[in-house]
Image (cartoon, rainbow, N blue to C red; front, top):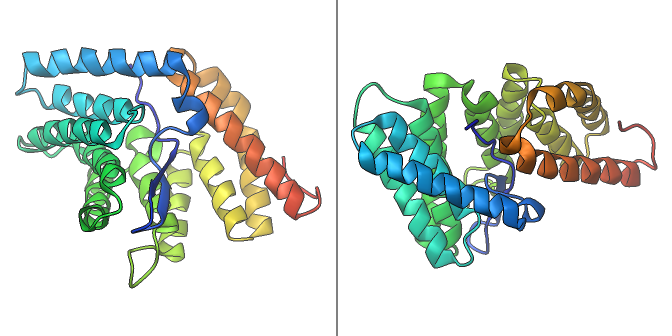
Length: 259
């Protein structure tokens, strides 16, 4: 099953006030079909992992599915349980050489789910550094994994985390990593979409307009390449986000520009 891109927002509320694109947007996560698919994938990868716990690929795939299924948790206790399953599986994958970019990547993802479940707390606060470390490890090993997923997620983390002294937020680092993701995988809609949202958030009209035009250019190509049931949730989320950023751009700049 194709890797599903991280497309939604996690808020480390109250304690951190940090939101970043890791788990499903509300409109996608609420869909019963997507919920059923995530549960089925979780159970499938769980069986594979339990049948061969020494297989690092089976381990990180279970970590991926645990993250996705945790996105549908109806309470934070269940979210934390699923996140810990994913964390344990990814750590097991990393216990065997060679080092695995996917295992570091989904370890960071599941740390994000756990932080959301435990916020507000000191434990959730401390997890932000763990998330940064694991995404950096994934980037060092394979920065192109999941359509430049490690740089993308680092950019979103730096963009939305509070800055010093509360946390590690940095607009400079956010721009650096989001630009890197877009350079590595320019045809993946998530990357120019993140840039458009980011520049609009920072009130950078020219840069936001450029990103929207880039998104418009890659959109029809991606619609022919990223097809099938594995991408339906992503397209629902991307379509909603694209419409929202276009509308906000038009509202702020009186309908001038956009795509």
